[in-house]
Image (cartoon, rainbow, N blue to C red; front, top):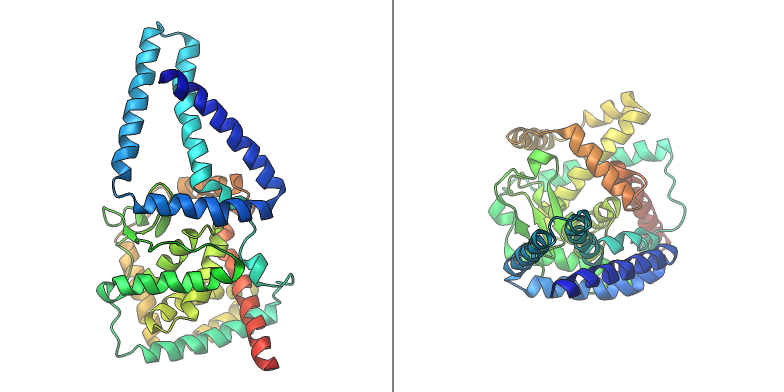
Length: 353
């Protein structure tokens, strides 16, 4: 048993490394083989296994036990200690790539959806900010009599609608379907928020996960983002982009409002860097109800202050760059030009009709 586990990991690691090199130089093959075939198969299998945490836990315990026994019986030789440390690490790394990491090597979904020209001028940026401000004001007025609560947002039917809306977009570009995806809420409340994130895709459980401490208004946007990850959309900017399309085209006004408010705040920051005076002027016309919502979200977030923000940012920035995301942690904001270009192309198509 020990012999097979020990030799197996080196064979598995070598095979994984060969696949990585092949996918790195052939991104379309990474998409065709892994993102649309292997990843959905593994994820759906894990998603259906209710006892997977127990199984994975016991495997890890037994494996560690046998390795520790082998170290003891080897009179603590330096080579055995090295194997004891490195082999579990290799198992974790290789499993990470098969369960999630190879998706970073696939083409981003915007490469299929948008044209090559994605440049946005300063005038277009400010014009879009004006448009989105007016649109957000009207949308918030439509929600005036509708109270957004956690129960109304996180209903099972709503989660299914979010999943279907994401797949409706991605299936046009040959992404594979997934069985019903469970949206997990992590415990304790505020755990993720205290480390500066609202959710993540749990590739071990094959489920999108959010922090229940989120303000109800934030939940649809965050959930759509994490559900996009569950289809193999690895890049953060791509997941934001797909979430925006799905949310903005949703028939549910609370979902629309969630993604549009999040985008409006990102757009405001970008415009402020271009022309602070004009941006302040446009923002002054925002609906008082929107201002109230932003203040309410801010107060909710203050309940879960970020701990070690600089350490977290540096670590996650390094992780994303190691996966080929050149922008690192700033990739979250890179969806802004993608959305603006998508809206422009969409309007051009409407005008042609």
